[in-house]
Length: 271
View 1 (cartoon, helix red, strand yellow):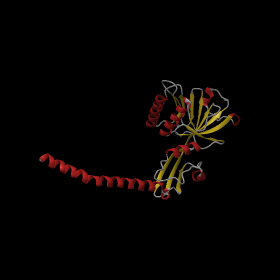
View 2 (cartoon, one colour; view 1 turned 180 degrees about the vertical axis):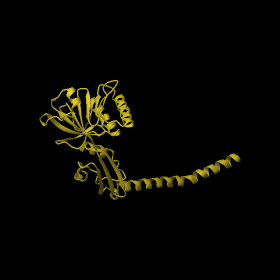
View 3 (cartoon, helix red, strand yellow; view 1 turned 60 degrees about the vertical axis):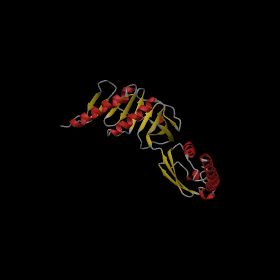
View 4 (cartoon, helix red, strand yellow; view 1 turned 90 degrees about the horizontal axis):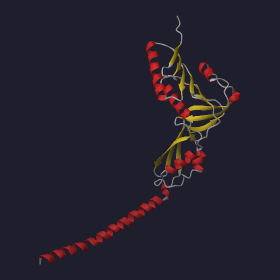
């Protein structure tokens, strides 16, 4: 008797649950259909954009509006990863692209351009020897200068210029560089590290020359690095020399870091 009663109760529960299951399935279908209609609705189609540019004047507003393919797409489904890659490919000067969605149909595009860290100047030939360059750096004559390239802090060559700018200039014996490609030359990679370190130590850097394995900085003091040696060790030596000179109140004229014991020359003190 107990078993029969229990069976009847369970059977009633099953019959009672069937309507709820159909109702749940119905709700799921309704929500999925509504969601599909919302996503497909033209209400969320991107109709305009707010373009913000930082050091990215090379980017044409008309390109974003007419050729990028952003307008008309569904804002809710918009990802932007592929669009960012396409913009960087189209405009080499772009370093980063950020997208912000503004409901219901607007998008904000923030484009950050590459900032110039140094200017590479190719030199077709040298008029001076290594010893004369160390003692007295002089700008190569116009007839020997080739092309001008702009490099950012990531070592990417992103522009080719025809005139000298205000950025640190590195004279380098090389025929040319590929635009949009990161520097692969080890000498130039080390040069960029050195430039950053010199700036951090308060040394104004305007003109430098790479000659064979030498990196000659035309500054006050003039600094000579060996690109064949350990750059980090040379920078550490430079920092110690600068700190000691500051404590002693000495004015430095020349620092040669190519040797285990750097050569240091001081500006003569006035009596």
